[in-house]
Image 1 (cartoon, rainbow, N blue to C red):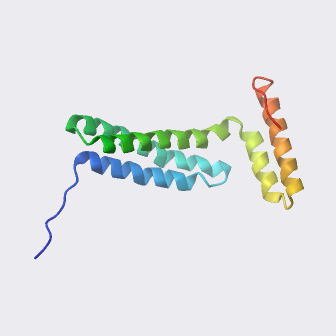
Image 2: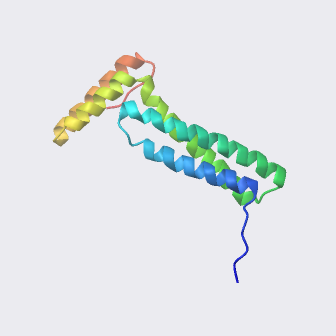
Image 3: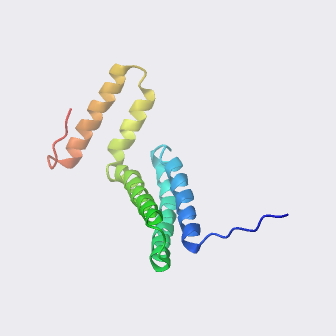
Length: 133
């Protein structure tokens, strides 16, 4: 006897898609700097799907736990997109740090890379925000 097909409500379909795109974007975050921007594509699609899911959930009176999870996924998506986009504001400094860390073989060399990153950020920020060492 075949099992009956289970159909998901529309809000669950959108939420599932949003989760998949969030995972794809999270994988793209680990790429080196010029290629990190690729992660913004699935993250933006995931944000749109999360918003669609929340709209449909509100209209369909979905369970509260589903709404909370969809909202949590949207917050995670926005935070990851911000983490991907922020290094582009300080591209030269961040790219130099990444290249320095690739060549650092010792902890002393890694510490020197951190120092040059802090110095670069301090020169870019121009004293707006204190940078700790």
